[in-house]
Length: 192
Image (cartoon, rainbow, N blue to C red; front, side):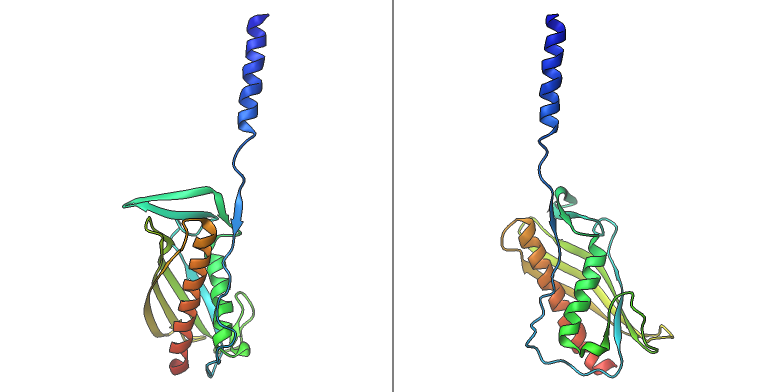
């Protein structure tokens, strides 16, 4: 009888321990472009056709580099949706602050003929152990219809996350996307 009671008490204790897992927090990226910015004229519409991220980054769990060849994949801090889709949406919204609204086609929307396509390839987009967030990669502009490469530019922006928490990480990453949008908009003015 004592053995059965001890097993029952142990089972209850184990179940109680399982029920106290940490709460999951969800984060998003937000457009940060200055709404008071003058728009830059371009002759034809553009769309952010694709944002390519390594599979290790294009996920819902937030990533932090913890050392050389080491990362932390958080089970408690998560993006509202995979990072690639968030990045594409926010970059489009940031571009719309710098370019005429009718010249920026929303992701997956029908595009008029000759809509130029922006393709972004990101190699690194996460904080490191020092609290710096880096956006490293490139972007390309393709001619609408033919897919001919019109230009390609490297990207390397860096920002301090402020605090080592997920909210600060999301804010810093949003700011870097705003810088990327500003760079792309400035380059488009002379290209199309």
